[in-house]
Length: 93
Length: 258
Image (cartoon, rainbow over the protein chains, first blue to last red):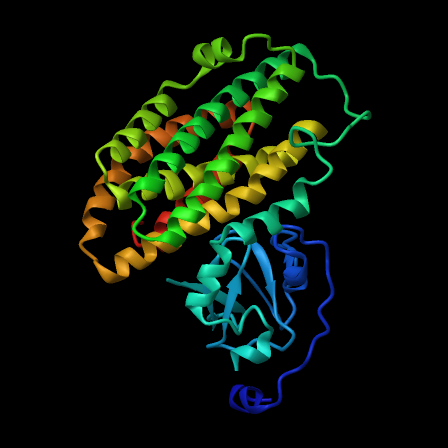
């Protein structure tokens, strides 16, 4: 599938579960999980917060241009695709 | 589209900022990881006794952590008066409580390790570079330099502590590791507050960057010297020292001070 077609395809949905991330109020825990280091492969609905190294999760597949928040460090981020095709988050002040 | 990404990610930026900087948010967050602990840790009957060399090195490291935490405690409290808005004042009140807790759990850990006179131990073992850093930070606050003081405290000092505590928690004895892991959870909020506050200040008034760039040059030598000493006490390898220095520098790089 081309990048254009992928961008137009419906987003995959994900059921978020509480993975024990205890640094935010209970109702928001499912949106975050601990990062396991460089070997921890992120799912299409996840990006790593560059500020505090927590994995930020969404109930939908993420795409470039999406805005997400890291509640653990109170940071707003924009999802970008890097040269190697991975999704990453850039801080927006 | 953002609302499809979940209730958190759909919040308007202003609403998100007001919520996460509130005392209520802080209370709900810390309850999750502090409940059930006493002085930052649970009982660890399995914890092995440290040999004398390990114990001595750990006490020296903890003394220096106490200098940093005392700087942050006095700094965060002093910054409340300088903060330009209510949100920042409330957030800094929560940071002040966090820093007071850090100082208390660290000194309590030293007593558990057999240190009778904690203040004397800190005075004897504190790294002079870190003491100078603390004096410089408090001087910035005394003179009312809000952005410079936030940079020194919530970016430079907190970024160094965040990098070192995370590494130390991975190799420490179980009690010290739990104490440090709890502190790291608090530090996430502190580094985020600093980077976001300064990021917005630099976006709105780029000239602020000149002042902060000069301050960074001055503080880097103090912080990196202190970092080097602490990592040596923790038996960090040359590669680990390089990696941690890089972690520390990431925040200042994101702000454009590489």
